[in-house]
Image (cartoon, rainbow, N blue to C red; front, side, top):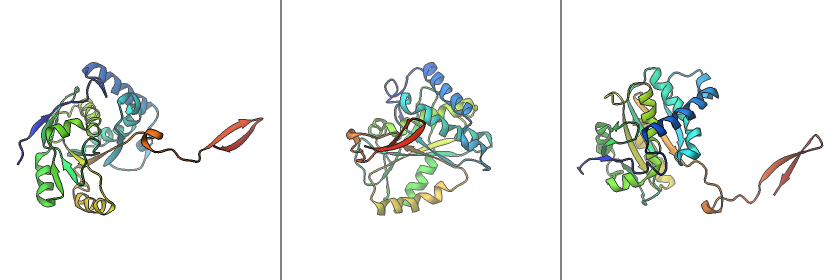
Length: 236
């Protein structure tokens, strides 16, 4: 087994503030605004939320949107959920044809450290070899898509006074460039784990990849203008 490590907050100071007080103040504001906007999930007749999709751009861009997602994690913990937060995040800096699990034992954030569930990691590896590999520390730390979730997780846990409790841990899994067949395979492998009542899933998603830089420029755009009290549709 490769030696475990402490995953450092590699992107603090660039993608988000490295200052504990500044970062806490920023996320506090985002979460407060999300609460005031009456996030829709809070009114749903459901029991305990089991997962979220949250963006992973810099907090200046995606932080307000991510707050709506993380209110669901807060809701789950308030309702008594305890277990492991599995973070599924894409790879941007290394080409993968499979999925790689973080081999860290601790994840550092400016708002407090998160403990990794090594038992769940070993369980997935033992059942699913050779589907999963272990991340090297440098690969783990270079990737921002997972890291952008960790301060938000730490913030929610800290606010609810459960940060550091052995009952709540995390397990990051980096998802590579999968074929449709591979997606089906990993879906079947992970489903029994993610369906457990003690698992909360965080899916880290791109926030907005629009424009020629990302090769996403629709040829037809629809819009509306108001003139003389009438609404007109135009195509450009």
